[in-house]
Length: 193
Image (cartoon, rainbow, N blue to C red; front, side):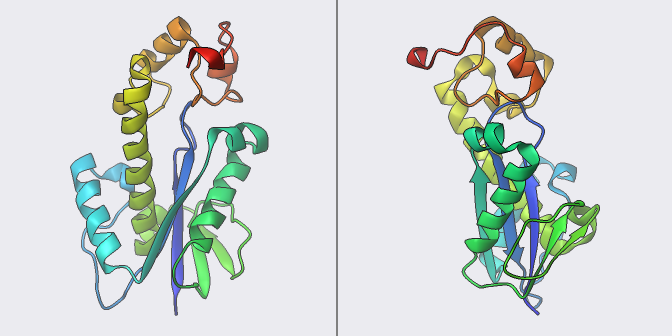
């Protein structure tokens, strides 16, 4: 049965899109070392991402942008990114399994599994693809907004990131609906970016 594993990356950061991936693994082409992306070193995640893309029956990565996060809220934006990832698969799954306790609305049956990214290989694979794609984008955005250090913290609310927010105010990729960004007194001026 073609079952798609789904996971997200980037729900908690103060900046950048939320990403999701969907993966249908090939049982005849097993991949050793799959686990929750947060439990892997960055270099190992990158290695596994290449193998996943080579061996999976189908895979897709999608995102919901900062405007969608601020408009819909982070949960709805995450579910939207998940639906986009499944819709982008080259092969339609018969069912889907999602890490966590919330499911997107899909054309096929979908089930939530708490800690699925740790226990289910296809969800682990999706976790890895979503995380590596999001991290790559934040490294790219670091070149555009170097004062924030996105390449290091990937948009999470580290002390360095909060200090940069305090000093420079938010940039176009900051999530205005997140409290640490919303509390910054400097107004966002798009003309300066």
